[in-house]
Image (cartoon, rainbow, N blue to C red):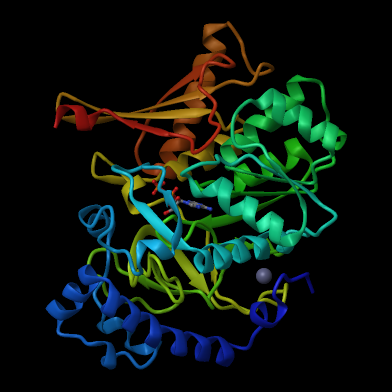
Length: 435
Ligand code: ADP
Ligand code: ZN
């Protein structure tokens, strides 16, 4: 049995969780209907009234919200309370287009930070830990969320923000950081830099890392665990629903518990919008159950994953989500075949390459091309052309087996691919330029 930040709620029975959700959803739908004209209009259009919602089973009657709605309603159109009650905005990273802004009351910040505190305690964090937060601070939710969570746990918080890797390492070593919070791509970069400075994994005091905000594979997890000498845990969230901590991994490292007392989750067919039975792969849809300022209902995340209610060894009862394979809009369609960057990452790491890669998609003579630039580690590098060509061929064939189409592989010298300090940009799709 593990440690919990809020044991009663994190290990509550299914009946208790359901009863909390049923009670909260009724209030939340009324709150949105009464205060958010944009959502009231959508409900009126669908002919559904707050009285029709008597519990979470009725949620199917409600309209969805999408990122397009958020952009249309930008900036104040989905505000659920007077501005004078709001104390903060945060904004998405804009990975897939125009940023959206989300609003928070103090109550909303508190519940968000509590979710992050649950994540920190789940990886063994306590007031004896030194938590190094190198997610970006500012509009991005990563820094603020883990920072607030670390305070709630009572850990010593190092508000590093992202970047300045030399300073990250200096503080990590001098102050004896025990928990590292950043994107997995930045964790890999920090691990690489530590090795270059002559540090071995056992030289640092880190025991765990809380890594999220972007898709990463199990292979990447193992690689980071090895380079830093830690256990690496996933954390998931999105600005629209609060930020990191919507779901977090426990010691079982087999999926992330969704904080179901605050967020009601559904999985739908991204094409038809139909709610899928448990265990199906589909798009995650969240309803915030008790947020005041930004009470999104049935928000479509475009993140694709599977939910599981199998009993977890940690004792938590909240439903688990698998790592999102990437968003539906990360999926590339190349010569008619669906390809996810995560599949490419899996092959690369399994074949012994570094997690430093760049995917370039283009269209030449009406046919899609897929080029993968893969950086060699210093001990892999060879200036004998035939050696490199042979390696490229082997990797090409491994990719073909995984993806169903053959990419062109380019093995490039060490340090030629830009490292990421925040969310890594893995794919450059030049086809859009020609459209
Ligand atoms: P943006 O949509 O601009 O990137 P956010 O910073 O709010 O804005 O990022 C939220 C998104 O980041 C999620 O919808 C999801 O696609 C991705 N994400 C967050 N955490 C994870 C994770 N642990 N694994 C995979 N993807 C994640
Ligand atoms: Zn668990």
